[in-house]
Image (cartoon, rainbow, N blue to C red; front, side, top):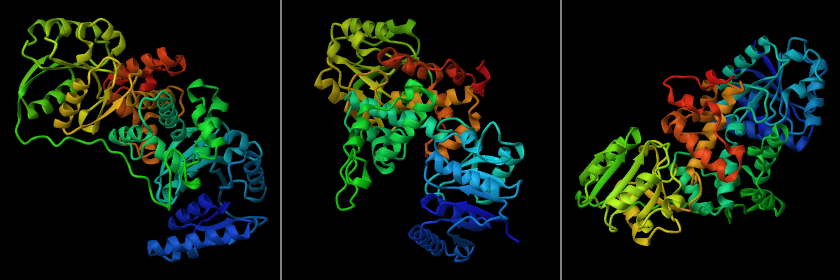
Length: 528
């Protein structure tokens, strides 16, 4: 006989969880006191069952107006609106009517499971089961253990998740759990970049997609709802008091003005007649079939980024020089018309660029890694600052379909035009950004990597669970720790040190970032 599972709350999340549970073989009782909400939920389950081609799924879901007393369900999940008093009261009721060994779960996304469990007799049976919307399609469920949660309850929670065909990621009872916490910089740093006029909303979204994110931060906030996104940020900030989670004034202003995104017809974009706004995508100049034999390209630097860039350059330019050691700069060909300085990815290259400036004629263009180098300080020491172009290739060039190109106060239009031609020849778009520490992608990706490292160091979750959660729950192209290894711990730390110097120590790199440069080393091993 199928095990009976009780769900309290028949809204979007509750009906979605009910559907997932029924598909997993459970007999499901959904408690929803509001009649119209019950009808909507039942209609949704029946509609989805028809879409799945399995009407028996809807037959296993039963709708009721109140919790039966007593109740024989062995598993119960509350999925009522995100209000502490409401969830606490529901859990307290479940604790009284269910058997003492029944598993009781809350689907909270932002409240403390420990505080909610305090109202339940035998709180060792209480855990969090944080499903993502829509539950029937999203693979991830965060299993949240509070200090009171017993090992048996945690094990049973994993079994429930597996029975539903979902994947569990175990997390401590901390603000934001894994996904909402580690993803917070994606929104907050994007908002800060917009406030600093790094680029337009459309351009920043395009850069994020070019780095592998499924949606840009602004179109995603519009989809979620700016008010919902802000509420999550405010909850995490209130509970942690960490300044890096402080809400951004721009978002608060937009929420106060009713600009909430798709649901109100306007947010960062305008939505008219249910049409999606057109996306901006950086244009890629179609490279000529012929290999360029006019330009002489020199690449200075070493490591995987330099090697990958040199390989791409060699496929498009016939005249190429590699210099992999700064002690050999005097071997730089005076015929070089383009010099791309890659360096080690973690050091300011102002002094090296000054050597290029003294060696080369003014017609040569110099490309400088703007993530690691202070371009403004660099320009002040040059005779020909107009020929220096800051660029941003964060990690593997193959992962990034568009490059950040810095429209600095000193760079010439001719140099910027050449930058677009160069990256276009490599099959990459170019987006002009303002000269700020971390540019855009360095700021958001570096901060996400850092937050993942903090989560491991503070025992919020294991590195493996964080990687899993961010890929399945946030659709990241790669787990943040693996991404950090690809970029390099020292490089991420350099980016964040520059960001902290400009905007405050709240954004400084965690001390464990260097572990990303140690092969197969768990970042948590250095925490003390």
